[in-house]
Amino acid sequence: MELTGTILHGRSFDPIEGRIHIEDGDIVAIEERTVDADRLIAPAFVNAHTHIGDSIAKEAGEGLDLEALVAPPDGLKHRLLRAADPETIVKAMRQTLRFMQTGGTVTTIEFREGGVTGVTQLKEAATGLEIDPVILGRESIAAMEQADGFGASGANDADFTEERAATAAAGKIFGIHAGEVDTSDVDAALDLAPEFIVHGVHLAERHFERIATEEVPIVVCPRSNAATGVGLPPVERQVETTTVALGTDNVMMNEPSMYREMAFTADLFDIPTREVLAMATYRGADLIGADYGVIKSGRPAALQVLDLGSDNLAHVQDPVRGLVRRAGRSDLIRTIRPSTADD
Image 1 (tube, helix red, strand yellow):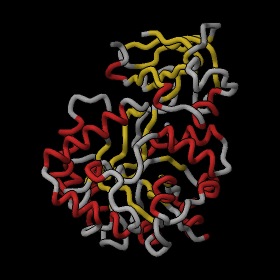
Image 2 (tube, helix red, strand yellow):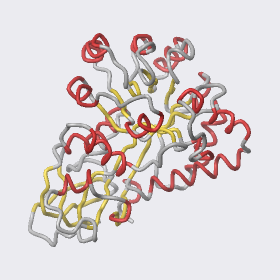
Image 3 (cartoon, one colour):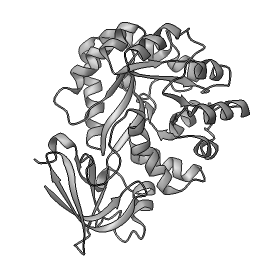
Image 4 (cartoon, one colour):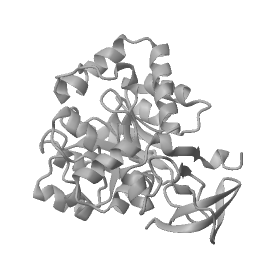
């Protein structure tokens, strides 16, 4: 496969005109040359935090606070999940995965409720699709063993010491929510030495010091935090402190669009647009040890191709800003994954 256009090259997303050569799912060469640059070739997205099980409950629970919406075991989403039949849950998750697949996303880091059954259902939902969820099971060590790791709700909900030890012994990923509502669970979450924490809306100075010293990445979900009213994460300070990745969180509250998440983040926080794009691509990939998110020779061909001649993107002067602040699904021509890059 060969692709030509304006290429956002490397970790700095330098725009160059040229051609990408792809073989066996990998980028084998990038040829810088004058071409018809009516296409924007950018890294595909890595959505660093989702809960897609609640795809059965989109826009449910207006007026409820965060605890009433999602707190285990009896938050609204958990009650709805218990009441739903398995076929409905699998179908709804498949629809969400397909939506993400056709929106420039190649993988998502999914905190999956329902124990072993929940993990199995998500694997079934993803069968045959061109998106590979990284599944962090919840509620039991057995779920972690069937998944890619463990996704803990929060240190105030339970003692996750055994789950953390088992996950480490298995060489898998351990992530945990922390600082979403207040600071009360942050120290206990950090004591578990997670691969990353999610949200970090409320962090004290000592937490920033620990996060920096212990090099703990943070996944932020600004639209979700705004929707639930818990506040907005201090993204500028987080970016100065550690690695920060971007996620869309619960499908019941937000469509899992990384375009919308990037634009929201760029509008609300004083950080460079290139950093926002990094948060939506290789920062999340780094959390799971994937080589996605960077267009460079030798890297997997996980790409999105957008139409620079669309009514929306025509005359964009800065392609990085255009992608981060302006682009949407209607501008996307195709998403390319390594397994389909030669098709």
